[in-house]
Image (tube, rainbow, N blue to C red):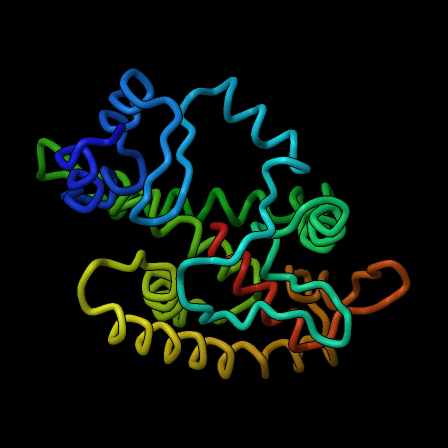
Length: 245
């Protein structure tokens, strides 16, 4: 079982690198608690590769379609019988496969070949901006964290000058909840979601009239089992893609 000491470590990561890749903690849990039920969050944790594979492949017994313990700031509800495009992590087959097919329309081989030079350029710019006067640097802070947000912002066709704002929205919307200040953080998250939505919705509308070589235009052109995505659905998909990044 988790000891109080082990559980307290989860909330005491001191850097974004440690938060996103707590290798020491993972190793300890794999050796001491490969499968554990945490009563505090009503959640099972599986650290062994083989056991994790078993869980992921047997959705009849280990369903992803369970209520979330966190507030629903994304409004991931189905509307008019349609799939919730933001609910991919809470969906089992066949709904999961259908939602994945929606996201795959934004990542065709042709699109990826077109984006490759732009992605390389963004990565090179971030590397060039890393301070050279330090013996140690945090690569998550300088490269791994901003790279996905900057790349996806660029692929959305959003103006370059707004990408820092995008990064702030992403960091806030997907910031983990702590033990204290949960109500205030939820309020901030909802405000960030609203600000993002109000910003990106007119861009989607404009690209529907004047498509470009970007991800939003690809989603507008996508055919999902004979149907087209609405502007609202596309905005929500872009938000989910930001979170995935």
